[in-house]
Length: 613
Image 1: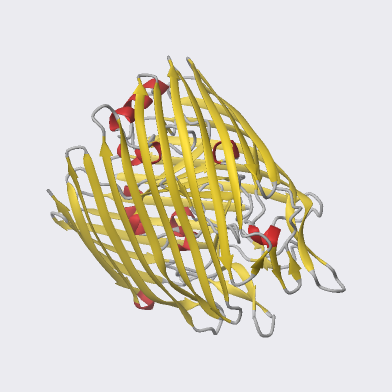
Image 2 (image 1 turned 30 degrees about the horizontal axis):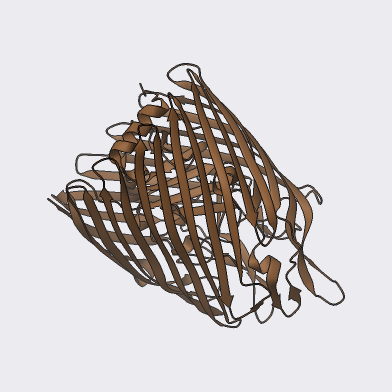
């Protein structure tokens, strides 16, 4: 039976590890395969079973078994998630979490926020999954913890960490569309110091993005370097540097991209009841586009975050502050090219025997759009060792982007008077966790006002952005999992009713129904598995005139550990060669619409060697 740990027990484990909270998720031992520890749902570690939020964890074993070609493959049709892409192999990707807009989901990489401040969308398509060790999907409004844009939730990717007894690895894979990938890395521990350095390179001719079109390729080189040192008295210091760069081709041109994240953290144990942590970070999102509409858009974000965690018996309190500065540059004209956001935040968690209570509050002050206060309250009750319920209410906001506020191009001018979009979400959840399986159901509603919408003059065709619409998003998420020595099964079903309250139309690019099923059979040296993903139809436009059909795909995979340290993998994606599309574009010459096609049936084979001590 899964045990339920009180807050001090979890915090003590974290203090013993003396790693930063944003990295601790990979270093703390899992209490059970079905109840891993997470750190994104609150400002501190807890198990999924203890969480007052809806959480899905994709760990390193899941990533290795699923052999994803792209980072989005891990997210597709997970509970509450819609993924939309302009084709396969590094093409523009949007993630809709609980129906929130594509800029309403926060992406963190080891606690460092990644996004374009001009477009407002994280670079999902440029994250190499081979460098990721774990992904936490936290659903629900989280602006009271993470500030702007956490309307639908937060997705945090944790990069690889040094593993005990593991000194390095080298891998090679290849397959359809002249795709080739290589990866290598070294890792080690000496006393209280751990380090890791790794890299990947991939190159693919890609597939045609439209009927009768030419193949559009993708090239990506990624690197990761990490060093952590633990202090004798507790706490530690660490440095992480991540970079992904390359080129992706699309209809009408290609884009050179650079994504970089660097973070330095320092954590100290001031007393038995007080821990303090500070992180300095910098992220870059640079995209230089060539072709029919050449452009340059660069974002530089710098931030400093200070958290203080206090414990009083079985209760926990977090008080902190954050400063972020965004700077943009590009080929187009911006009335303002920088803005500063300062914030203070607090969180209180109370453990009252079988009942948990969490309160959170945050104040953001942005020089572009003013002050925003967000808060949340959540309560959970454990009926017995297996069954639990949770209730929560939280507010959120999405900040207008630099494009929304300041961009000036022919026939478009930004609106500096825009207000942020504001949301209010209520949720009820119920779960059961047993020796070898679990189930979870969540019901929610999110009401969003002041949606930022493009409005144009029908005579002059001049356009701008305005706060003119409201939306209501209702949904149900069902998930379950089963894990034994020989089997690993997970399933998710999502239903979301998204409505523009002013027009009655469905919100664009969101499917109402999603289903995902992952099944893996494990043997001593073998594993075989399959993933089934199905999504219903969706509209590509706000007026609901452009309908994209639903689809279903089947992927199969196998792994073989044929010699100590050696393993081989084989995967077939979209076995039935289903032709489908999740987005629609327009020809730059004729302005005729066309569907962005996902890849058909593809094959990949790989071999890997892990160096052990």
